Length: 145
Image 1 (spheres, helix red, strand yellow):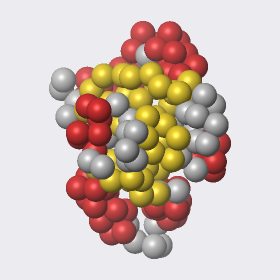
Image 2: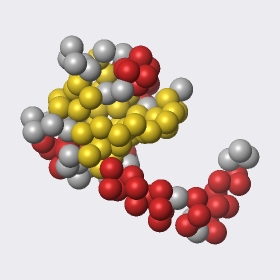
Image 3: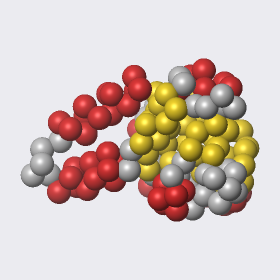
Image 4: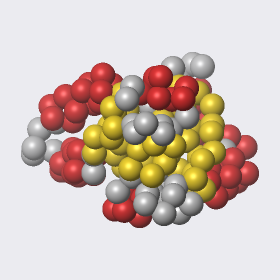
């Protein structure tokens, strides 16, 4: 289970160091795609296979499902960690997630979120649990945490 946040920088070529703890969980090869809330999501191949199977099971006649498949599958890339522990994030994915230089990698259970550090800080200061709506809090109650 991935947890914790690590801060790293993307170099001029678009390479990002993946913390050793996350490399151990993701493996030397894994999938990165567009995530939710202005981030990228990194999945081990085992988890990715499950997600891909579920997405492919959505009927093509389901409009929302088609959109989700395009966004998730259409932006997915396979990454391989180099000898320095880095992956290359293509320019189109960096643009989708507004990644500039300083990046936060956050373990959120069975995947890793890759987010611009300023966006991560803003979320923690302004968008976290303290700023949830009554409706959002009610949905959390349903989860029985």
